[in-house]
Length: 450
Ligand SMILES: Cc1cc2nc3c(=O)[nH]c(=O)nc-3n(C[C@H](O)[C@H](O)[C@H](O)COP(=O)(O)OP(=O)(O)OC[C@H]3O[C@@H](n4cnc5c(N)ncnc54)[C@H](O)[C@@H]3O)c2cc1C
Image 1 (cartoon, helix red, strand yellow):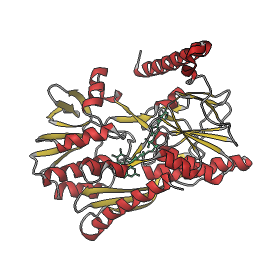
Image 2 (cartoon, rainbow, N blue to C red; image 1 turned 180 degrees about the horizontal axis):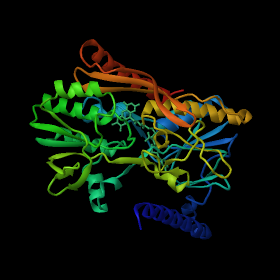
Image 3 (cartoon, helix red, strand yellow; image 1 turned 90 degrees about the horizontal axis):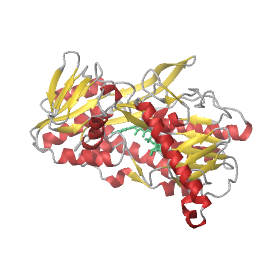
Image 4 (cartoon, rainbow, N blue to C red; image 1 turned 180 degrees about the vertical axis):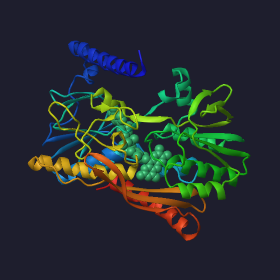
């Protein structure tokens, strides 16, 4: 049984077990409480209009839910999310080095639902009945007219060829901190209690979540070590041949600010990891490095929900991303149509960023609203990638990129309208630092307020 089979088997078994429990529970009058679950109707009021169910309350799903309702006020929008509060990945590298607190990153789903007039439904989606247009969740079934799947990414450790014991140890002892919450808390503790030696960070291949974030993280942790006079350095093992984005800016920061605090190693494909000896072997020459602590960022893949719902495909970049039309985001070859995939789980080679997901979510919300109104689509609009990356804290200096995308036919031709500010020195860098703060506040306000 391979990894994918195990995944499918365990999800199917879990769903079957819950379903069986709910069926037998509904037969027994004494245990009716257990009947609320997969297979029984979700405790939601009757839909008041065409029902749009959005799974995933991340940067994408929040925008889709808000803008669908905004452009189609008669729609009955339900946002299904397994977490009970939102924690932001953007700005989390500043949290890791103690420059912002968790409260700045944490936001209230109920407020977003109240202000934007949709329902927040706190549950895990576990499958879809496409024939009857029903989303199955851990807290009951929801009938939909339109279904948007925005589950983000999951980690894919398979390219490292490690066993499940090592994988589980990596997830627990060296979490990547590219999915928010406990992983970021663990990383913050690691950095702030670091005594010295190599602090390993890895940059995966493929189209990983937030291209600049591993380099930003390396700079901020190096900055922390330097300021706190910690005799350690960041060992940045990059599977790619060179820095994947904002190269000039990060390279100059590595060389000029953190010469003794960052060791950057390109072409560092991981061959093996020994967590007991704390060694990692990389590249064709099989070079070995030791580490005292750190975080291992593996390849990413689309959220497993896509695979379970039968709307996933392997792409040139990653495994199991949405099998969709790149302009309408609609899943291909699906009975009864009206299933969409957006956010980091999309297959297009966009930068997997919060701003990309947010602007794309606005477009998709508007597209679904138009379909509700008259069955037509709106003209395609490129998402917008805007990203400020800190290279130092106190004073905060950052570099930035702003870009859109163009297609040739159905093939993504690449970035267009690119504006870069790779300069972190002087006023420009300081100004970019302020813009990062303003950007985050603007996007949080967009997602959580009317
Ligand atoms: C360290 C770091 C720094 C970053 N910095 C920036 C930055 O400066 N600027 C920027 O633009 N972007 C940045 N990003 C990238 C940004 O965070 C992601 O691109 C963005 O979160 C993608 O949004 P999404 O909605 O696709 O996925 P997510 O935000 O991950 O949301 C997916 C949601 O779906 C939920 N979910 C998944 N499966 C289910 C299920 N079965 N049932 C119910 N709910 C489910 C998850 O709980 C999650 O809340 C950064 C990321 C990291 C990690």
